[in-house]
Length: 200
Image (cartoon, rainbow, N blue to C red):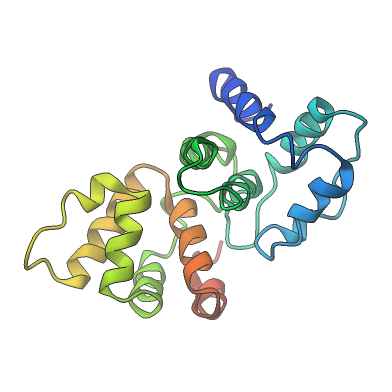
């Protein structure tokens, strides 16, 4: 698959096979795309006669697509699917881990998903308006633990936001960050979405 290393692609297939309840039929797979985050990619989703066939077709369908803000469709799909499982279900952690591994590979050829085109000032403002201090801390703890580990007593909220943006930019996880913000505060996300990338 273009842009996805073989080792990650193998892990991805194995993880999705563990989610066979959502790949059991074409209709159950399409139902996942009712989520507004990935609904634009429902059009053209191939139908197949087996679980393996649906997994392969879904990866192929999403791997090189993106939303207008530059977020990769396959990464978004993994986040939506992971949210279907409880935090105690290891499938959630596996899917979220893969979602953090994919941006550097699946979006490698995307001109929007680069550190130079993300509008970090707009992302900083979105974080400031979408999340209070506790929500920001929880987000870092749940999804960006290396950043959370840098949070100390007396650290200002603005400093926390800066650390989070810097980490996500260095590790190609801006898409993962935006996905979580959209999940937590969809109204604010929609308001800021047009400004999250620089005009190219």
